[in-house]
Length: 503
Image 1 (spheres, helix red, strand yellow):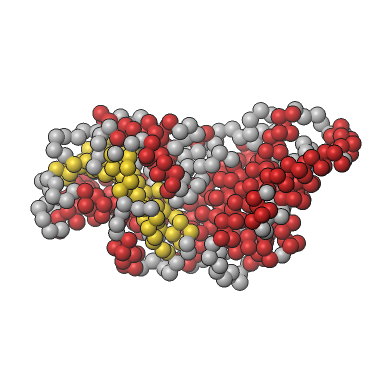
Image 2 (cartoon, one colour):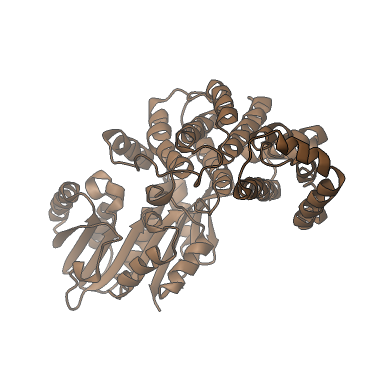
């Protein structure tokens, strides 16, 4: 299923659908009409089909509001006088939310229409369009703090968003969970603030552990990150005797330290001298888990007759200091972060920058960074929602191509791994929102500010050969983008791997 095609049908092929698809403004305006009469804005907001109208979008909205205020001021005043009196900040806030909703919708639609045209699956095409509309209308109602409207839409969505339905119905079920959780935290209209902190952040559970292991075994995303990272690390270790890897997050807590088995084998089997010693320092919050991984890696290294040392640092990345990493004279140090550093990104720019600067103090030869290549950390809820819906629709589409509809492994991956990510993006704010994925360009700016310089990864052909070897289904692609390697699904970027050195 190509989710973007729903947009092309709703935004391009049918003028009547345009009026419904454009955030369902005429219908969902009931979520905010108590604060502003936006009928004129709603009419203009759906004219997105040409580039000239897109460029003049802001001017159109401004003039429409002026025309309305001059043409029907008496009617507007009578309407407002009959409603509860609200503060001026409420009017401004609601108008801002709807303005941002229109912009988010426009950007997502243009991005999807610019993609390569593909055929739509016959199954549930009309239902899929309706489900997209309902999800966006519900997200808008939640953003406008209209609990009554949002609750009514959630009731409909729970009927249509099936856990064992089509790939889009399945991903929609995860977003419904997130919207429901967010709605429970919404304060009444007129109150100061919008959404309170989430009751809990993502926790390590046995179900999540199992789903993570299944995801690693079945899908190529994490394996791709390990393959590219290990190849770059091996290149950095060429001809060195004492080599040291600092694993930030210790391979996501995957059992057996899977990434480092492959690295050990490559160090032992490649031509040239074997390093006198390999040291791995695992950084994480659970000392027991780190100890188990370290013991298993030690046994594996002994089997290969490789001198090995493991050190555990039980700290979060926010509290990690340079002095916590024991770097001996003559050691060549590399750092490895697999889907980990995005959790340090906060609203303030300084949070991640301070962590990166402390890592820079250790003067690593290379830093391997593997992250989700999507923008799920924007300042506005509706923009994040649209980006996440597009991104995870592609992932669920890939799962649909790889696994049968009623496969229990697929259900566990979707509901215990990706659903937790989606709920964190959609329902959480503040420190509780840890899934703050960003695009490669944004990481490039962040790393540069901290004193790192990009090192081009020149192994596109090897990566494509690896992808064919792991025998994933048709649809996955690997491209090179400004020195980074990006794994995607049908042209949609999913995971990006980049390499950095101290400048």
